[in-house]
Length: 299
Image 1: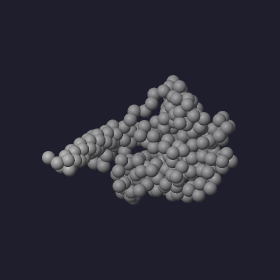
Image 2 (image 1 turned 30 degrees about the vertical axis):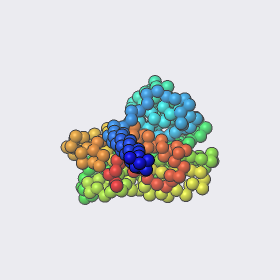
Image 3 (image 1 turned 90 degrees about the vertical axis):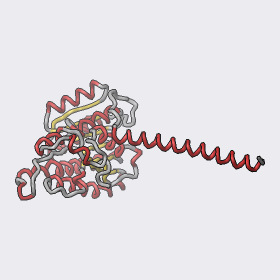
Image 4 (image 1 turned 45 degrees about the vertical axis):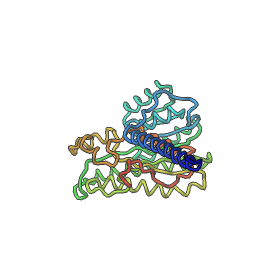
């Protein structure tokens, strides 16, 4: 066998080994990606005073349950001073106590986001207590009884928009001057898959969330004041509101999950991680846009 033949043989053997290694690495990466898609990372259970949001002040509406509560926990575990508000006092106090028990900083107050005076007071109290407002998460929302347009009660449509849309508007209206004065800030609005789809049995919910997407886009111009406005759109997240809706419609998680692109119900902590990303210094190019957190349902 000539030296040229030996060299050729060694070349193909080496390339073959490299190819097998690359294939194995690709398979391992795919396995990890699949695991991450189907098995969300658990939420931290102890606050880190030196975390990514140390020294930041974060205000969250609808912070006593579901995604709002999960986001309050997540920000507090990352070192933020968290101010949470909603209508139900007992639940809010419970979230506040749970965060403090884990070493986090949380302050609770009652606010009805349908009332502009109460929202203004909430923002003012946050700034009065902590001296600034770095992040506002306009999360408060309701999900009314599903029904076709002609069957939706007028008072239900009105309450839906006053909570889901007016509440977001009021939050933006009163937070923006504060953020302009301090020279920075991030506003994250709660949108939904319903901000992008026209589900026939939830027209009132669709309308409220389409409006949130519009408010978010309108806020993009605030970049000139070093303020970013963004939104996040979940699909089906394991919250009391989703469970109530499914119970009313006779759905089950087991029946619904396989119909989604990512075949499971999302976890509130996953949405909290999305909100924190949008609010972080890693997302400086994200402005006036909506983060698709539907697991590919909008693809």
